Image (cartoon, rainbow, N blue to C red; front, side):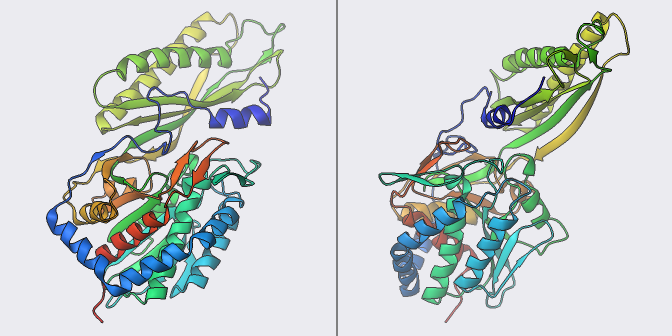
Length: 440
């Protein structure tokens, strides 16, 4: 079977998933209203009254046109996973212009800017990811209809990058100093086969220690993700001798076996996911073969499985492998000649799961910051850069970029600036509360 570029792109962007994703933030499950402790409400209210914070708020509100222009500019720089370098270079230039003490790109491509604290004994990170899900050839030209901007990747997560720079500029403009060092980050590899490679590196022993982590992601201002959604991803390849569709008829056909494997897995996984902790499965891409009149020598599929709890993820992983083996055994028994089919499993993604309590100071501060602007904070579970620090027990939260967005991971993705500057103000408030304002 020959797959055209158009079909490949369509396959990449099409989901077959048991639980329909949230249309505004596809990596976030519907949240529940968070309970904000009165102590943190008081802390945030007092911080927000500070004259320098108010000055920063005013600066952010005045930067809406610049933020919009930069959103368009960054969106129109393609940034698939493993190809984020051009967007990263532009983002680094923006951070330098904003006044960071130092800016660099690490060995995996993350762009980092350091703003030194006084005395800087801790490090707090504010992150958005550089990459999008779309292949390099995707048209990312931004189109405008009324007040709405349309382009692949404009909400997830290009707007987050703009917010990160906007917070840095506001801190510099208002002269706000923090006790903790602050890292402003444009991370690589958050999407798809990127497999969180950027943030995994940042939390390895090859990078500096980060004590608290804040990600800005697609989603409305009330988003407060304190739980990580775990996932396993595989590329499964069935191999055989291949041959002419007439002359070699009777050989075991990898394509036929793969089709059976998908059928068996879909039936078993459908039954499994209808009860218990929320779990999903998705055969996102398939391919193989050389022509319509040739028995393929190999066929492959890429599978994504997610669950709220590690136990369910392990069980659905087992169902996948059992289904593939069932199909392989069946088609090897059906063959009339030639060698048996074989199968190879390649793990192409593994996102850890975990949960942080709502009572954690960082989570409370982020919820109180959102509530300060009259928005109900909603805690929830997401598959984001926050997964890695959450799984390690490090304080981490993913907050919404604000505005209104939709069609994430689709070609008709859109974003509307519906008071989105308030989400940037809330991000600044959360950051300063966590990093602690330095005494003047």
